[in-house]
Length: 480
Image (cartoon, rainbow, N blue to C red):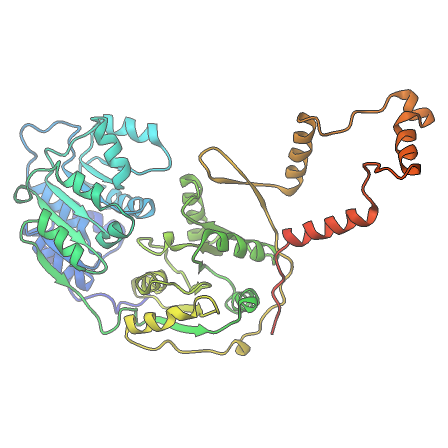
């Protein structure tokens, strides 16, 4: 790992309380990043900060709470610090960092987010909290149940503010801000990848004359990221992907797609070609999401197929390759996708497929990042003839989501359903079975009279089976 992304400013040179310096020793951090070197001194001095990057806001938050006593009338259910995050994964990461940094303090830090652990989180809030980290929806839910209130809040941090707008959380954010003390009576910090007009408007409404910090490099993308783009036909994307994975060794590779359906399709092809793979999309249950991310971090799953839910806020170390199987339709999302590699000064590769469907996005992306992406020929990669995919059927479950079902189990379920609805023919009697009585004679008599027998011809059965098989199996990609 290189140190090019760091400054010469040491954390020990900042005015930090001793418990936080001990927490920094536990994390192994010594030098500040450029945004930390600019923003931390201001925040430590009690100045509101609006920053165009993510910084060490937890240090400023905890330092402020250590040095400023709580309000005299505060109760245990009134948090002193609040951190708002747009996604569950980002909230989990922030809480993890806060737990490590605050290990030598007396702060009780709690995490609330949707999708899992409703009762456990509820009970934790009932026991009291000092620093609360969470997503807007679950926070509002518990707030309306009077499990906590924000009347004694001293510090608030809004992380990934632009993402809050993108996900439609801005009304929830304003709802929470209106239930806090006035901006002049608290420390406010806002961080965003882009300081757009709507983000600045939010800061103007709910912050106390914030100091704007912009740390902009010559390029939006990290210098340590090696970018390249291929122009495959649609049927060449799977063979090209397999060829690239074979070349790289498939060590901690993120494959981004634009839709959940495409993610499941790519997963099927990779599983069919003997790759251990996971899928991270918006409707994956939270426990499974956490397990997938943990397996990906440890290397148990070398390939993770994801939609843009994983493009922001996740710190996954040592991601060697990011492959945009579907080129992003939003230039900002492209930057966040490839930002999953080359983290903390390391190097990485970002490979994009400008296919027939998404190639039109390339020009907007190049204009946004300020440079051309080097073009590589598809013929330069040893594309791999794919084996058939593993197609997993799914069924509807409560709540509208889909549950994966084993194909063999699906057939048994279907047969059981036919029996329950009376669609399975009754068993023949022993007399009919022994002498070929009415059960066999009646169709024969109808056939002799030229009447329909109700039986389907063998040719018709074979034709229908062929049609059904063609519908079920996806078209095998061809190598051009």
